[in-house]
Image 1 (cartoon, rainbow, N blue to C red):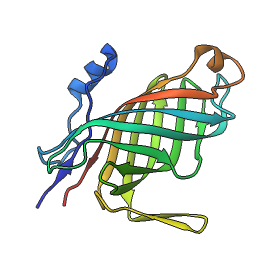
Image 2: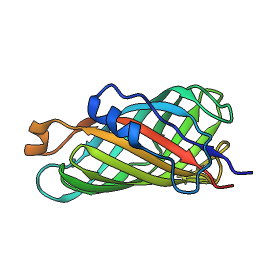
Image 3: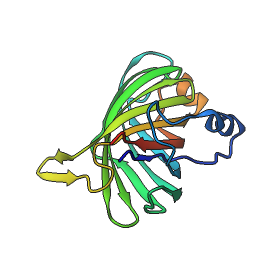
Length: 182
């Protein structure tokens, strides 16, 4: 049986709403899906500015107003399990990290991801991991095993911090999804 779960959102900004209207599921995806709004905050150490360099960050956020087919939780939280690594500037950058989604029904999904950004537009790609170890604790995926992840997000950094010593904190919002060809 082919199953696809997509997390999508109605965005409040016109630019992101326009982008969301043109997003199609990945090639080979079945027409089933769902939706969530993703909003959160990234906190940086040595954050991006106008000079290319390495940095790290943590992210915490919420998934709300979720709908899915097959049926699933209507909300959840998401957070990086360890600081994510990145490099670049506010105008152009790449990152990689691992995040834990804890759904309202207490099920979990671990996502190993990469991002590519151009200005405020961030594209996320990744995959669901079966488990991830942080020190002595092992986190396990209990929902969406084997799925792929994608997202179209907005990086809301302060122009003053981008032009200065670097971003310390930035809002992140947009759409994200999971899909499976199995």
